[in-house]
Image (cartoon, rainbow, N blue to C red; front, side, top):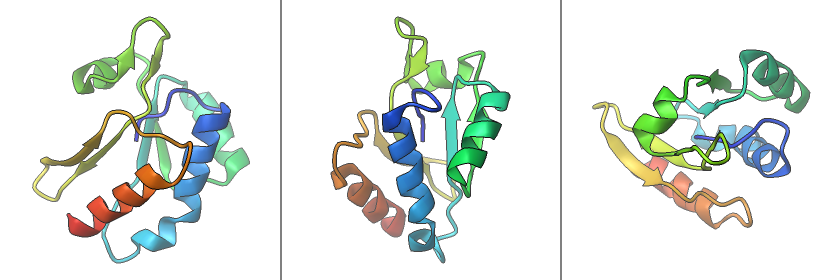
Length: 116
């Protein structure tokens, strides 16, 4: 999961939704990782405040974001997006426009994870 920025309302909603649904992923052998351009310091404190139960990775060089096509040069952040990598290391699901406006994209993600 790529998130635009720690502490923002949309990203907080996204990570908290995943945090609260981690039991839905039990038995699926899924690792959730959040990635953004924010610093490890920011990630540490944000994860602590929101009691996150998954890791946040920092891509301050933007290399991952550029390789995945989600780094927004104009804004200096990642576009909100989700990738599911299967056990064969191939992308199984991509959503370049993940939305937190409602639960539609989250439900679609859960279906993709169950089908992996």
